[in-house]
Length: 343
Image (cartoon, rainbow, N blue to C red; front, side, top):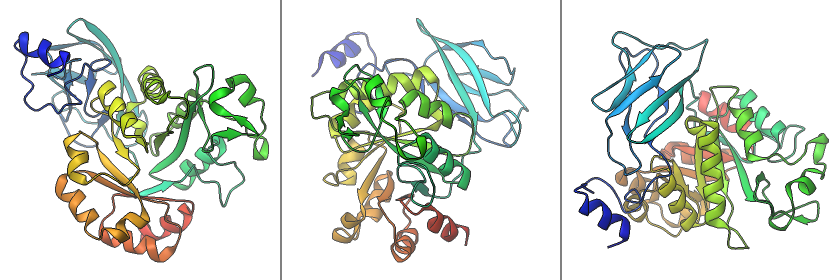
């Protein structure tokens, strides 16, 4: 039994309903959802959880919109109140949860739900570089549900966006942010920081971000996870964010810091049952894994976890995975997939 569990039991706190990851102390109080349902009066948004993962007796301190209340531990819209599409989409609130005071941004759920995830943004048929602000804006403009991007830590501890471990001949993990941003990318783009990427996404309520945390060659995987979750929480961007990683320890660290984080595993070596047991939200496997394991999507659905397939660039495979019921499809050809999901 770990020390956290001993403390909880000594204090008389039940661990029923918490998996081993959630039984760790979260970085801060949290919600299990930050989106507000549309056209639903008095809609419940989420229970309010304290750091121990318990539904807390919380107090709403600030609500500039005047739309929300907390009742029986649930953050919800006031009686007979509803939110409709259009106009304001982000609503700040401040809540007292035990000894913590926390601010969140609630977002009207106008997010697109068409399964299309642009791999490193929409770049192949556009002018921007992969993983650039331009490719993110293009993914948003053409109407993707998500835009995937890759994050490393610079030598001075800044989460920066790059797929490859090196940019312009400079290794990301051993180079400062200033040196990395001096590298000019295609079409005048420069290497963005995670903060810049998030700020761009938060200008709109339609396309979500899919943040891939890259395995570290310098043993900084958990530091990367911590910095990314801290940045998301500081920007109040939880509603926009999905996480993915090939490193299972990174996945578990993200889940420890934010038990409500939507984190999917990429490496293909875990069963849906294993992922579910560890509180992992989804599997995000290469298309070849589904050929080797034809029942994988069905097994994932049975386990109650989401399915993303990557990187699917041919029309016939897109059709196959749509027919099989994949929740998300990551592609370098989002324009082709967008046409298919419109049918």
